[in-house]
Length: 365
Image 1 (cartoon, rainbow, N blue to C red):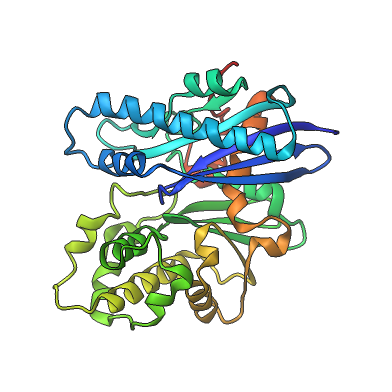
Image 2 (image 1 turned 135 degrees about the vertical axis):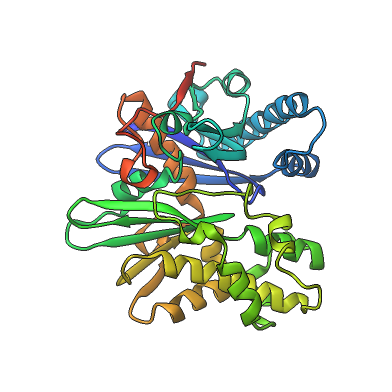
């Protein structure tokens, strides 16, 4: 098999589990296989709890949760290797994101921090593969947001010399990569992606997510509520900007609710909020919008994006050769490749860092 093999491990702000992607870096960067493993319910609940600063004995609990994330990562790597008929020795490195529980770049002391729970030493021990982890901190240290990191990867796989491309990732948070044909570009977090919709459907229907946006489609957006939500100061910030559950959470939403709303109408409003904050953040209307992440599977959301961008083809990244649910995992495999070759992994125009930086720390097998 020509080219080096890398694995990318990503667990995003939806906190639903781990995506593992096997990729080969040869003449092109090619995805070969994908596995998903849900977090065990107790670990998922603990990760949600650690996302809030009011917890008790947080250092102890965070350390154990980091062990739990590492074990889950190791399990999905084992599944991916077995399905691909490969051994640990066949893999050059793992790019392991960890689970974000706090994201406060630039805050407090002018530098701030971003915190992803993971025990990368344990992951290296259990998999027998070199682990590249802590992939955001160097960008934050260089004055950046540490996010989004995917625009550099998006440029590598989706960028075109003959036209501008916009890639939209809708995970828990939505972010865009603006990839201009002349090599310039930008990237930033738009605002909530699936996170508020997931929280609301979990509270009212006890479902993990609103499949295809069917529940949202059964309601109607509440104009007054939507305007209150859109007044959030974050949406008026200029790029570079990034956000997370530190801001967009149950407490944030509760501040804007009267309690008299029909739940399905709130869900419809939250879907409209996601679509509107994406479209309103774009400097120009694109001719093509490539969508990845779990939001690409929400037919109601995709249809709403298309309605708000009538002159644009709104397509899942599957149409350009990379399935929507594999893009972020592939990005972290790509970042592991960049680290092993001592190449920068960030796009300063997206994160606001002082310049290109080598991202990550190595935990050898």
